[in-house]
Image 1 (spheres, rainbow, N blue to C red):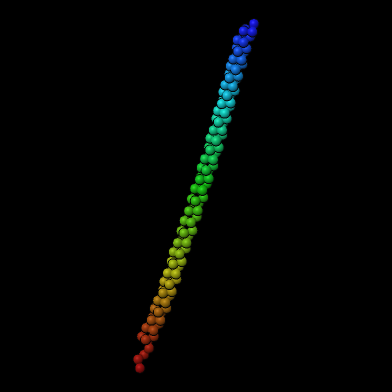
Image 2: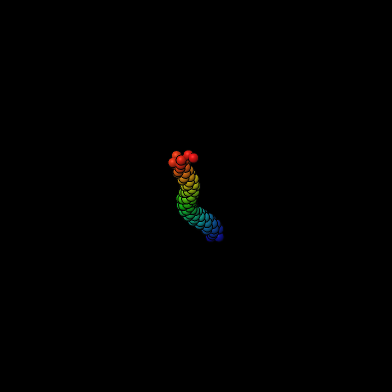
Length: 125
């Protein structure tokens, strides 16, 4: 019976070792699956975060574009306003000078007419 126990003990030891190896393999596979799941979840979270950040960047870019266009339009309006006011001021100065010249011409004509009437009506001595 002693010879019989040895092979049974060896068989049990081999079975136990086989079971441990099988269990170790299963645990390793489970850990690898858990790790793969974690990596997939992290990748999905990163992708979602990247999409949100990209959307935020696009929104900021659009807002900056609108602000830039508004500033350009405001500057254009200010420049056109300045140029228009300069033109109006120049035309007002020119109008005032021409009006003054017309007034002087009218006064000169009135004086000349008055003098010519006086010289024709005065008797010669």
